[in-house]
Image 1 (spheres, rainbow, N blue to C red):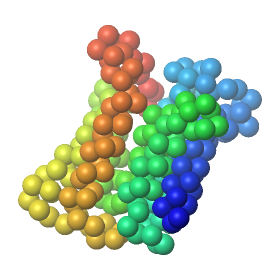
Image 2 (cartoon, rainbow, N blue to C red):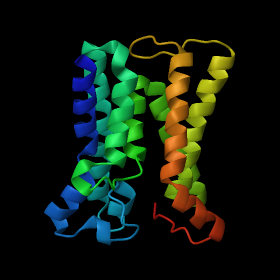
Image 3 (cartoon, rainbow, N blue to C red):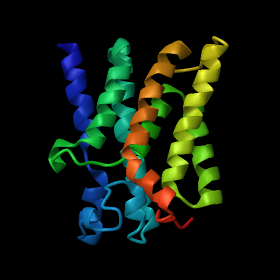
Image 4 (cartoon, one colour):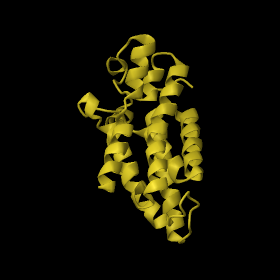
Length: 204
């Protein structure tokens, strides 16, 4: 019964479409009909409102962070299930006929729940790649891959990463690999656009 409660709570948390709700409230526009049609912060930024995009980013990160932290406090053994379910909630929200965002901000929130170090690593790589290439999708993929590679290296040397619950890197490595595959999957159209040189750049 506990695991069902965690799955339900985490999914509902992850499925809240903050980008859609905020743009409806503050601009009376449907973000799904703007730019890429995505409900995430990058597409919200295309409205020209950096504050609204930043607020969306924070809220999308929190909906990944909070369920994992809460689950960790009460049912530590289920935190990876909570993380994955919250992420899938963002990707496939029941409120939007299972058509959600790409999950980057929610993934970032989950990373911070696992390890502050990995969270800041993601941000550092994302910003660096974005400043060089100006592509949000490329930055997200590189940052996600970097987090995975660091975990892989630590797994190779059998080190223990500093996390909130002192879980071994081997366990964290497995879930990060799953997230990497999912992030690549959600950016498959962007990857195609990058190959065809039709991907839109972001203004930083």
